[in-house]
Length: 542
Ligand code: SPV
Ligand code: MG
Image 1 (tube, helix red, strand yellow):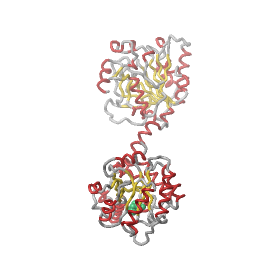
Image 2: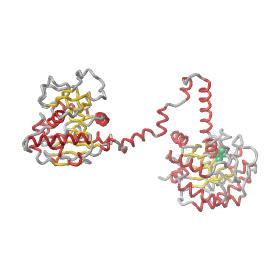
Image 3: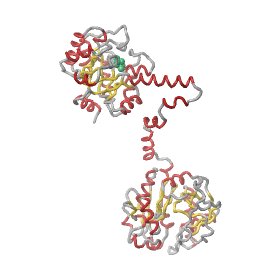
Image 4: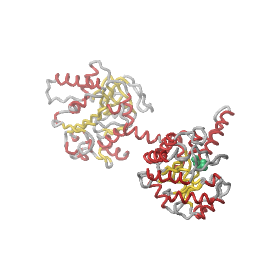
């Protein structure tokens, strides 16, 4: 709903509309947070915040800029104090066009002469003639495009000391000229004259009051007096001046900051008001830095019945599509990658390729999956390999933190390794790394990379000090090394596709060629679904 409509709806309601003065995004936000109906973009508050008199010292565009700032910060409507309209009818027309286009719900103009002085300042309070001000109202109403945009006419006759009859006469003329509401202003220290005005008002348009000097006039009585809107015009800035003064004087007086902690809000409160949480959420969704330049390759072609003890569970389902409490493993991993801004994900399918229904990933089919292995599938990713890549084996569920840490590494080839090794499984990808980490002794994984000396499924388990978890990072250069090594090995086997070349065969070849393969140590944060036990465990985790 447009803010002009929102304000109209409030005017249609049967209670007193309560709006409060503000001067910038923050103060507007605080008005909104406290459940008030709208914002009074107060000339007094805006001038005060510039530390200049409320006397048309600032220009229309300065007021407008602040009104926009407030409007952007809140969902509730803004009613702007536009003083006398910044000049004559032409200025009023220009003003209405600008404010309406900016999404402001209403403007309020007062029947004084430019340059006005704040109504509470003793001395000169010069009124415009009725004719002149009627012309301004008509000009304002003629300029608006949106029928719901409101023009409020402010009667200053009581402020200028011209008496009740003059005030009523003016109000009637302004209403008849098209004003959508009358703001009857008073600086009396009690509500007597406001009561009288309201009682004598024939309700041809709604009334608005500003009870700054007569705070004893309560909401109930306002309702009885048929007052439609109350403006608490300047209490926000007056409260903040007092609060800031107290804190600054205490800072000036005291040695340290301990005595002021109860007088200030937490930094968290500040961040919440700024919208920092939303910023972080948007960064997560759209900030495509390093994570975006990475492509993820998931080889998922294999027939699970050959490789796992899950035969009874998987039936004809590729492991990647195995359901873990309502979501396939692949979907869970895609969600995890998306969360950290990685969207370019390529899955190499093979066995029961048609079972892959996860959306927003690229699929490449390895039709020869029965005679090939993971590394052949990886190589089939083709042009996707012309980038930094993350390799994620399809039967591993991982936490996003592992991927984030992988992306932070600087090395060309990084295997993620865990010192918690399952030594009795023939499927374990054993790794021997340079610096040994005693099983379970380390709680925090170091960011320093370990150097991998040996990687093999057939290694003596006692020699291994880590297990490869099925997640690896290859920089663009690392991918080139991987590809070269792959073709070297393939050449060695005379391109006989019947010879299975394992991913680890390639890693071993890379190490043997003198290239450093690094190990990123993790302690958990992943689970490989290769046994019934792990499958059940995954169900209990997710
Ligand atoms: C303002 O807030 O700038 C007003 C209302 O015009 S008052 O200061 O009460 O006159
Ligand atoms: Mg004002």
